[in-house]
Image (tube, rainbow, N blue to C red; front, side, top):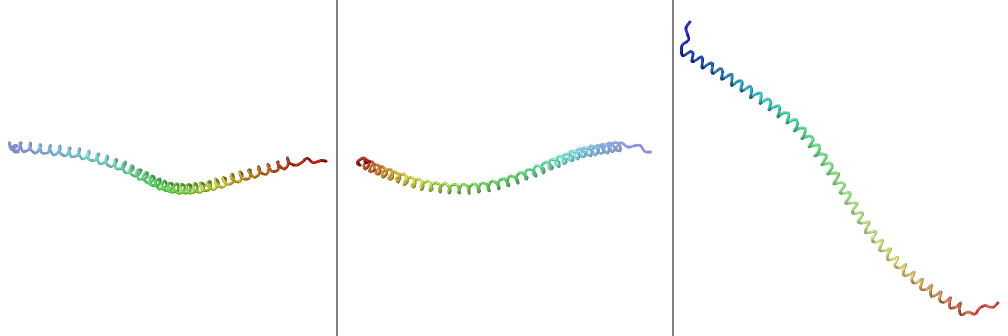
Length: 136
């Protein structure tokens, strides 16, 4: 067999170094692939959490929209009640004014009646005092 030549040894060293670099590169790529796999797993986990959080947020937004709709209905009904209350208060005020006017007429009539009754009492009193006593 022929002995390796000087050039062959160097060539083998270069091949060995190239193979070692390939092994190291392969090892680095596997480490990167592992990190990439972990990152993908973390992203998938985060996406699951975000999807769940988004679903919950959408549910809450739906509940809020429903609440706003009910609140708007309540405000509309409240405005209607306030309008009716204002109308009732206006009617009550008118009734109170009519009552006060009627009461004032009653007071005036009562005063007139009192004056006439007093005049009648005075006339009857004068008639009784002028009359001679009855003899039996």
